Amino acid sequence: MLKIAVIGGDGIGPEVCAQGLRCLDAVSKGGDGFAYEVTRLPYGGGRYLEQGVVITDQELAQLKSNYDAIYLGAVGRPDVPPGVLEQGLLLKLRFELDQYINLRPVKLYEGVSTPLAGKGPGEIDFVVVRENTEDLYCGVGGFLRKGTAHEVATQEMIATRMGVERCLRYAFDLCRSQGRDKKLTLVGKTNVLTFAHDLWMRAFEQVGGDYPDVQREYHHVDACCMYMVTRPEIYDVIVTTNMFGDIITDLGAAIAGGMGVAASGNLNPSGDGPSMFEPVHGSAPDIAGQGKANPIAAILSVAMLLQQTGAVKNDPKLISAGDRIEAAVTRVCPKLTGQSMDRLIMSTGQVTDQVLAEL
Ligand code: IPM
Ligand code: MG
Image (cartoon, rainbow, N blue to C red; front, side, top):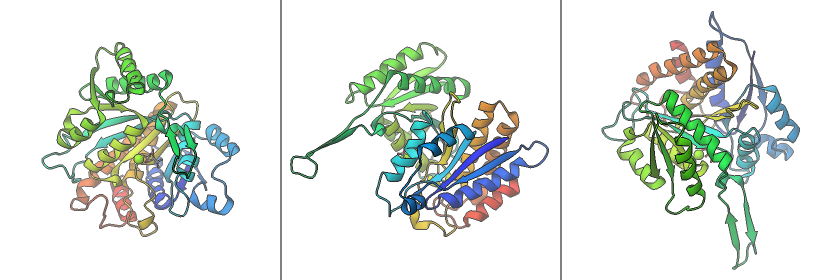
């Protein structure tokens, strides 16, 4: 029995999750189907405003022990101060459940338009492995003389050898097993971040010694942004830090057709807690509740949930169910031609209807 915790969250989160769950239900039926159970959890801005609580330690412990996977919509809303939900829920889950990999494919599906002239699906197809538990995201820092003319604010970038190495090993393994060109590019800023990224570079070289079949490349993050636009085909697998990974994966989503199609997985590869799957996009409060949100990113996140959880549970039925959803989306995308993936002509539900028809 596959046990999934669903946190719809804020804004368009609940409505796109609902579409992903329709696809989950469709692939669970039939001969090669599977049994599953969904538990909806109320965490997000609404609960915070009503009860003043984001998530309790007990709820966190239950999430950790009771579920195989978490399916998350989006968090963040304008009437809650910045950081409360992002740090108090999203980052808390990533950190406390030790989801140390954020896996973000950048893949242009056939029929989806890219803003890059002269580039097609053959040129835009790579994976970003984003470290997900360290770096500027640790919340280490503080204020001195806050609010005065002599105010000091610090925000520290944390890189641990253990954290960096486990992320690199994941990326090397992924590149070895699934890479198209068996080429892993480390993206950093070694010319300025001469401590933290020196550690990354040394670890990259040392760990790379165990993977002689994987070609190593290094790009500074600013150059990477340029190449993602001018020569995206040079990338196979990218491994990078939490902050840089956040930034370049929005660019990645843009070149692959928009935030409406980008899926992600926050993975705990050691399996001692559930992984969490979510669209890369945010809560988009401006279009919430209007049936305008593109559900493809959320649907592809369900595909990834099934593929990854199937691999952890060693259950080929789950993997093939995830593959079926991805294949259905691949067939539907050309039918959406002419529509910007971020400004749909069809409604949220109608896009899902098309995917269901393919399933
Ligand atoms: C993302 C988001 C989050 C991040 C925010 C909401 C904290 O931008 O998942 O990319 O920075 O990781
Ligand atoms: Mg982001």
